[in-house]
Image (cartoon, rainbow, N blue to C red; front, side, top):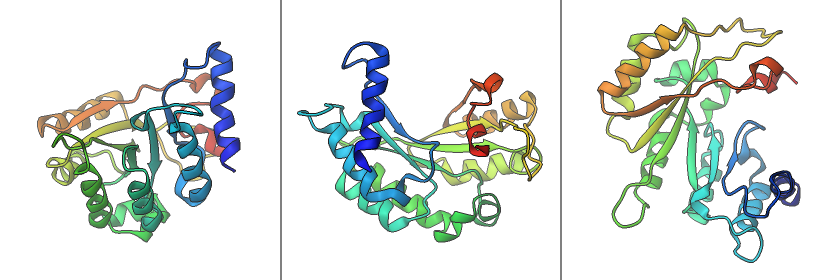
Length: 218
């Protein structure tokens, strides 16, 4: 329900102590937003309404794996000024389908075509930047070959790559492991040498099992 989503911003602002203290909202980490399209789109309209929450559309980011191409395109048509983040996690379709079963809904080339179209809708002839999230899994998608393949895929696109070293948690049935800091640095360097804007997301909240991805076990 849209009101429940908006209520989270109310509580966050109350915690901060004044109404404009929280001015960025990211739909991420609580399930696939586009699987709840009507509620998410309605919530965003309220968040950017000057008479309600008054957020700038560019301060709202929706993260998606692209499991619903129709809803992804519809969102970007109806709310073209919001920011987009794409959870990619692999540089090719076959590996992506292994790691993200929902990726079977759309090939990487078609997913990135939607990204390209959204990027072209920037203002003043400037391409809009899209965030690409990539979780690094030891021995699975973190090799230099994977880095080179990802570079070839993204080097001509206006993206920022967010590298996320895997955060382990008890009960992980897949046996995923975190890559070494050296592996992360080497992967990042390959992208940077291709003039791709890239940064590593530092983990926060591991001590209470609240880092990126760890809440999925609840």
